[in-house]
Amino acid sequence: MRRPAGAGAAAGTRGGGSAAADAAPLEVADRVVAMAHDDEQLEAYVVRSTDTQVRVHGGEVEQLAVASSVGVGVRVVRDGRQGFASCGTVDPDAVAEAVAEARDNAAHGEPDEAAGLPEPDGVEPPALDLWHPGYAEVPLDDKVALALELERAVVGADRRITGVESCDYEDWRTEVAVCSTTGVRRSARETGGELVAWSLAGDGDDLQSGFGFSFGRSFDDLDVEAAARDAVERAVRMLGATKPPSARTTVVLDPWVTAQLLGVVAGMLAGDEVVKGRSPFAGRVGEEVASPRVTLVEDPTDPRHWGASPVDAEGRATRRVPLVTAGVLEGFVHSTWTARRMGAEPTGSAVRAGHASTPVAGCRAVSLVPGDADPARLVAGVDDGVLVHDVSGLHSGVNPVSGDLSTGAEGRRIRGGEPAEPLREFTIASTLPRLLRDVVAVGSDLTWLPAGAAGVTLVVADVTVSGA
Image (tube, rainbow, N blue to C red):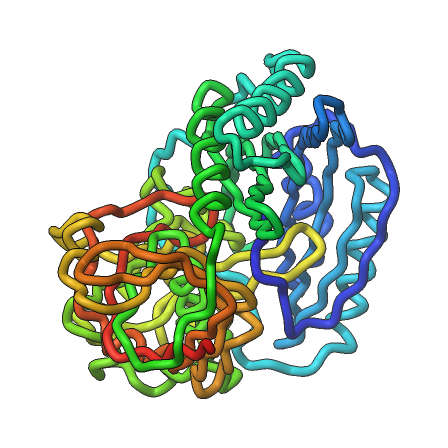
């Protein structure tokens, strides 16, 4: 899973070496920390992973890859200066060179009074059931067969399905260790897999695409029928779509769209963005920033979240972090560095893009506290509006400072409380703070998705929809 990229420290990268090292990540990290000098802090971040990727098309295997990788990231802090370097191997010579390079980068880094590695805080990591090594025991032929079964299920589900763009299978096993001279010594591991189908539907000259997916911690969790059903439904329901007239109206966001929206909001609640002046929520702790119906939490201790983890990227135990409670901003997520810069407490929320990046503050498991109404009841309560099934360009369409938002969308018209004709090629324009304030209902359908945020049906009033 990808995490926000690191920033701020001088850095270097070394690659090469064996990707099939047998040493456990914690053992490797201990050896790296043993290289520290007495007058410095040193941290080792070690990642080992194995991935399987299968793509099928037209009943044939189009791509197949099984790969293992290992990498080491090294942070050195001395006299308030931080340096970083990494290597894509655990070969002792390469690791020693990375340590020397990190040390050299620290000597030339800019002084920063907030620089420094975290100290143990006494909080124990939660016990989470995220490791199901059975993926390694499933024959590769069975993984290919599952992808082929998915393709057949999509093509045979509806006469309007003309084919698939691709059907993909992927699984991974990842182990991480973080050790430092300040006494941090933690490790975590997880498995995951997913099936994804991209379908094509046609009716005369009208062509539409759709997607469906299934994900799970174990191979047996993957559901071909569910992935195929969603891929077919998303494509077929858009046949005959037209542009809606421009208007200010009520929109109903389905869980997939809400999850993407919350992912953007979560990025603005990260300490790094606040410190750098790139968040419309900066300086607003204690203020009402959303509808009273909105309660937003970051909780990587909940194993149902795809981003669940017992420890963060600095080795701190993760914890539940209230972000917005009944519309009031409670605070932000923090790494050690952002907490020191803002005079706050660390929240066990450091994330990394991988071994070759430094940690930053970020959310990994955001969700709204659900309401008590199911989606059909929420739609029934809207006399005239738009049900939004998908958005495009959301991340690039948001101004991180002002929160101004403009994103392409597709969905269905709501007439008299019922989903009606399909709509496409329209734009939703507002600001994220205003969208949050204009939430009038939160659904009961909390939906776990393969992303950093869970989804739920959301009803938002008075949104600008620009179409024909």
